[in-house]
Length: 196
Image (cartoon, rainbow, N blue to C red):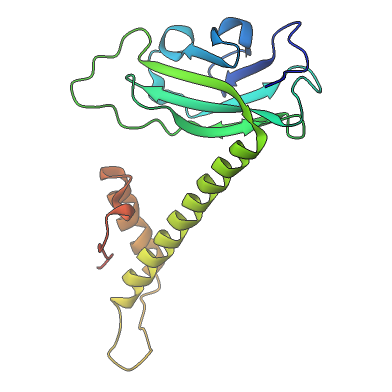
């Protein structure tokens, strides 16, 4: 993998509303293509308060056009989870962090909340991005189906007609929000239908 120029820091990042810019010089350079930032020690030990991170290239044309920078998170030493990428053609991006739930009994300390950046082939990161967008589309479909099943519960028994109260959407959203607060992944549980 050829990097065009590494005379200075390659990239920068900041946690929206929680940090000043942090350059790659402040990350631990694991090897020629990987950097890691200890988020708890560098930014905020209350990692859940960190909702979004920006990643940006510092120099135009810093990477070979066949390469890009992927951004990942890891909690408690778990597997790295992809969050987005930047490239010469798309030099900056704000990405949701969406921290996973910490395992029960995990004691948070130094190195337990990490942000990782790696140089990877552009085509591989585009494929990862496509998978991420497909999962968002699937989630949107499940939200729509939850609403549909909720409205279906108002069926009058007269064929295809529904008799909905004027506040049906408000009722659904209140119920949806309550379930989401208890379990953000409730839509991923197969077979569950929303009913009154």
